[in-house]
Length: 209
Image 1 (spheres, helix red, strand yellow):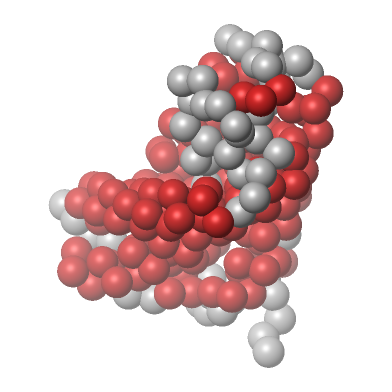
Image 2 (cartoon, rainbow, N blue to C red):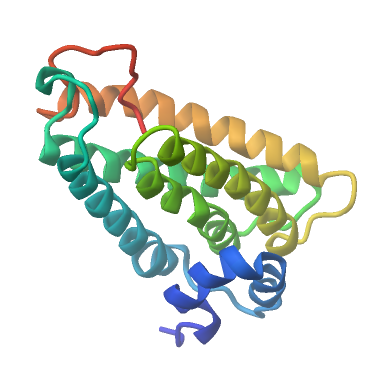
């Protein structure tokens, strides 16, 4: 098993995603050999997912939401659902990018695709935590981080998969569409299978992500 690259240190990537995103993408894109996709998932994606879900669930218990108890999902059920749904989203985006890359004259590589998707989604996972704070600041900051994450995902796909000019936007749009579709399909199935993942009464809210 090859040594895990030092530039993929999790705290460093989190800071880079916020302070120097394009420099971070260039540094990661210059790697001669990307770690295996499952290594990136276990060492980068899963710790951030677990941390964001745990912190956001704790905040939801501490900060009043203004909703009645029957309109809130169970802590453990929704936590397990969130981790599984977001993991499916990451895998769906990564494999979509991998299979679509060659169609757009890029580099079809599951290891580099997982790396690009993982880096691009870092701000969105921070946004999940921010959304737990009171409205409108929490939701507003969370939405901005999600939009920022989409921008970073575009640059990560472009820089790490080595796309040519003219094919970059096409791959980005196709990857996001396919990843969102996969997450939606499996997300609805998981919502019905995991006890406590949905509240007894839904009040204008889709408990999906």
